[in-house]
Image (cartoon, rainbow, N blue to C red; front, side):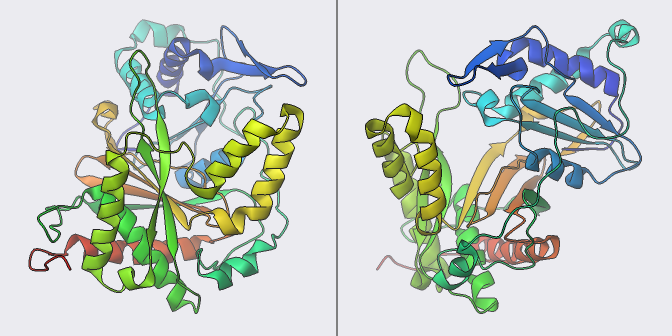
Length: 405
């Protein structure tokens, strides 16, 4: 997230500590050689807050935090980097999914800023237990290793099912490209009187942008599949984050006609929302995983699943994933003033692209998260421009005069 002022690192540490005290998973560690279990300590094993002085690039710092694997035995499942910049500090908050499954990381961030705003000056003055670190890297973050080339690269370029790689490298890990768009002034009207949601526009724009990207680079653009999270509802007496995934599909004929594409996407998202339950993991991968879990003994299951997913990934995965958190007004803060909030995620190959969206203030903030073996920075920026144009065209669609065929 970007602020317009200065974040006091000591006050931030106290606020983070208060949030960690309320959420044991944020200070948990794994133990056990074969049968893993969680140990809940009174305090995290290391300071999760890293201060970066000298006006560093907050997005490059965030890439490092996201790309480096977690060692949940030796370091906390929470990483926070505070990057001091002359035009306003940037804050990166990264958590392992095991620590935030069942609750939203956005809720934890909101708690941190709430505690930051009410921390007493006397507590800040007395905080001397943790010395500020201004150099090196954060605790428990190893260097990002180089990755070997993968055999699916050529297949991905020829199949038309995935995004054509460009300016890629053999570096492991992820890169991120931010983009802020104005929130559409109106909802797109479809034939029959239905209207598209902002989420529908994002998913449709992903389909259209991938199609145009592939074609402009001499690749194929056949059946495209974009993964989209969907709420499964909360059972009585339970709480937390209960989210499944669905796959939204389009064909070349759909993407050749903006109204037809809009209708195709809206039909699928509407159907998914109306269903009483969706698969926790969509498509072939979900069915294979469920069958494996039911029939294969535990000691062999993990290794076999990893091998099977690695082998079948070019055939079973979608082109991209789009996740829209919606409005994040709960994170609002006036001291410091937060100007924008972005949501990032990981992007498994070969699709290699995760588009995270939030609405904060008057802007729609997008983070294009990509695997470095798919895009380089220049290619990611070029793809974002194509997506921006596709989103604008779809937002201007008027299907009122078009009657359903």
